[in-house]
Amino acid sequence: MEEVNLLVFIETMPGKRNEQIEAFRKLKPIVLAEPGCLRYELLSDDTDENKFILVEKWESQAALDAHDESEHMVAADAHSPTFRAGPAIVKRASAAV
Image (cartoon, rainbow, N blue to C red):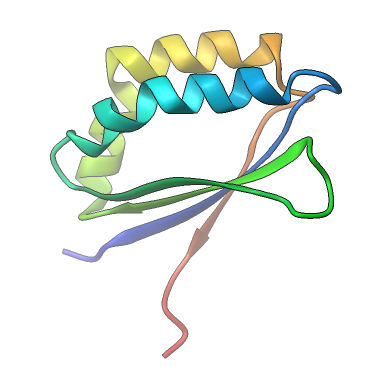
């Protein structure tokens, strides 16, 4: 099986940065405990406080699919429009070397 790497680009509405951070803080331990989760890290854009990059690494596509369908992620996806400026942009990435 091939690992799956995701870069998720997130932008919050002005003044809603802390809501994104708090939502991630609650999710992080739950997601890291999921089978197949190898990395789940939120990075802040140094030039724009409303932008973030979520870095995810999954053991397999099946592990990512199970994550996407989990109860906590469905709930998180339903809540995120209250503080995000728009839908997240998800990019798949792989090692160049």
